[in-house]
Length: 412
Ligand SMILES: [Zn+2]
Image (cartoon, rainbow, N blue to C red; front, side):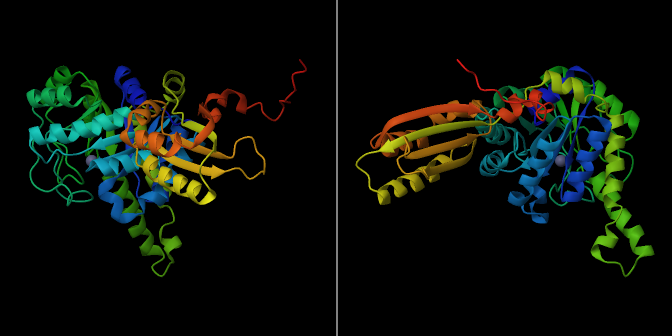
């Protein structure tokens, strides 16, 4: 249940002067290490899946594990797609369960960045999902992520950042003030004067990419000047690799599982250190109390058909499933027929949405109009249509006592 609204989570950090960690995951070791450390520290956390890492795992297979970890957690969790490069990947990620999107068109001109980002923001906001945009450019020097971010960094200009935020409607701004994607060669020189100006100019929470390699004092100063979310990956990746290199020295002929022994623990220790330095440790309870739970919505239609034989009814269901699944914010479409002969309603549609905001945009979407006008209305009679919210989230209060609770039937 503790999947929560990422917008609320980051604003809680912004208003209470700490930063939430967004840790990129490239395997189950990373996922387990991050979630276990956040549990130990009672910290809100963002599980992050970066598009530039898609070569290392199957995104569609990874997401159910990430979502299961979030739902099982007792601390507040959000799931973001990091460094999304286009609209389709963002739509797909939302369909797979991401409730935050970081869109990166920072390599484009300001004008092009604004128009590409705006398109993502409009789509994501229709689904109730916040967007992080980046203006200025954070390049990579060496280590993970360096290859995907070639060239020289361009520091974020406060005037351009203002125009970018205003014209795109992004929720959070990733800034370039001297960090790098990947590994630093020497101590990073951060432009805190620029950061202060940016914070005053844009007036929304700021995000830092390339947090690996900064010292505690630098982190604290970032947070003082409006940074409420820190992306962190290279530090974890390097520690995992170092642990394996050490292991090779003692068990050179060891198996894969021998060699990766201790990796999860090493990643977890570094995550814990970060959560403590950034001030998010110990914040879980207040975040849970103050932030919106992320509640899926289920839209149910039951109906009978006329003028259609079974063959046509199947065509109608297949076609409907296809066009409804394309609507952003729709996570799953189920079209089925009653098992029981003589059921009051013969057919049903169940459409699962990421969030209640998506229901409205679903009804306004052209694909919904086609479904409704061409497939459903002409043939369906006795139609019943209801929206349900997930009881696992809304009734979480009752879960602890369920073993001793007995359901009693009302006699009147
Ligand atoms: Zn990044």
